Length: 209
Image 1: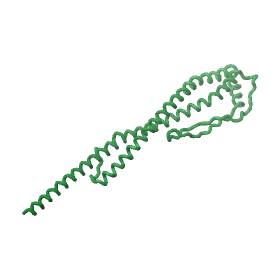
Image 2 (image 1 turned 45 degrees about the horizontal axis):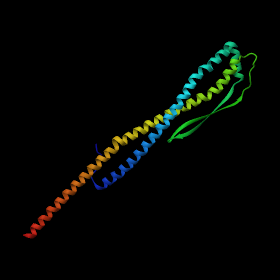
Image 3 (image 1 turned 30 degrees about the vertical axis):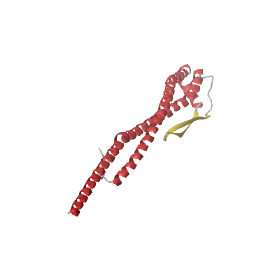
Image 4 (image 1 turned 180 degrees about the vertical axis):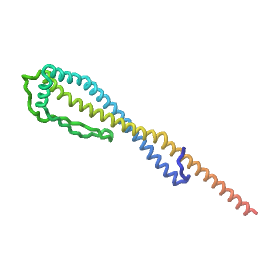
């Protein structure tokens, strides 16, 4: 369906300029979409690796805490955890992927609150705390990648809608409208030429008589 415009030469020139801009924008958006898809696939692959690692490691970490509680006691384990408490610092930054701001988490550990008695606690607790400390950065990295995948997915969908709108609606309508205006102008020009020829023929006839 063509655009509702007046078939004038000014309108024809204006539409031709708009069509060039739209076609240029369509190419840029297509290139952006291709780039987004490439980055998205890389992120999905990395996220899958972290997800599998986290899913495999989490039960082992939890199992060590359960064993520590069984081999000592709940009270001793909780007291040891309280005394070994350590600050976890998470700094949120951003990075840009194809104009999309992606969160980036930087993890660091602060000073430990102290220590606990190695006599009354089991070796499983030592291993559990050590593994938990190594596990938390992986968990946060997985969360970072999951957020990145979601944001890129939303941007891909938005870009794809814009590409489709230009490709299947806006550009075809402008092309159809340009053809319509050109045909109308050609028709008007033929009509004017025919009218001028008739006037000329009438004048020649009058001059002959």
